[in-house]
Image (cartoon, rainbow, N blue to C red; front, side):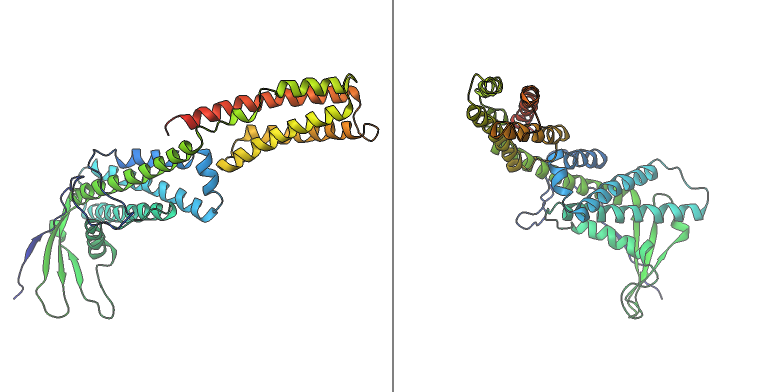
Length: 344
């Protein structure tokens, strides 16, 4: 005789303050109200698209591709789960199976995407036991129901067709050792609610870590302004370069001040490089590349005008060109400084 044992699976919602064992540096559960999964996915996407962060991540294409895949998958599975929650009762048993199978699979995939997201961002992650329970239910009912375990298997599972609705089903698990079957009722909305609570906490901590990382970076440099790289004597340098071009000052005098200008630009590049942002602003990259040729020509002009490709008029034009574009760099530096002085 078969012994019927009904067990209520404890997959109710859990509060943000629920205690969980975590290792040092691993994700913790916050107590504050969390934003929904879709909003958190978009906020994290915005943060990794921050030019500095994006440039660093793009140095490893595997990491970048994993991140993009994870964020897309989190969003896609959230769409699938949301569609389930607005679905009316299927008009056939086959449709009911399809909805249940698909929803359980979406929950499983979403868990993997969040875990892999943490991996790509090098954030320690320990899967919540309740998430493991959801995965086991998916495996028992929709993943590998016909044989669980090696050899002939340690368990075999059956969805009761008569119990199947869009809200869930009864699941019977039998064992080859002759022990009594296990009967469970699986509530899909309950599983969704539990997973949302947990993953919202996880994604919130991912977002907080990204914010803290950016805040720490900005704090390190906010008192070291890029615009201060350009000395107040810059206008004086160009005045002396102009005087040397027109012959009222020695050529050596012009060469020295061209060198001062070149050193200013190199210092600016070093400051950008130190922050990890030398190559992330297209406008800055363009201007720096644009300035290389005229500065080189001015240096050659003052070193030996007979061997230089430009004459006095060309030198005057180049000096004017360099001065105007350095002013553009200074204006961009002010904007960057304002970003570093703000909260991420």
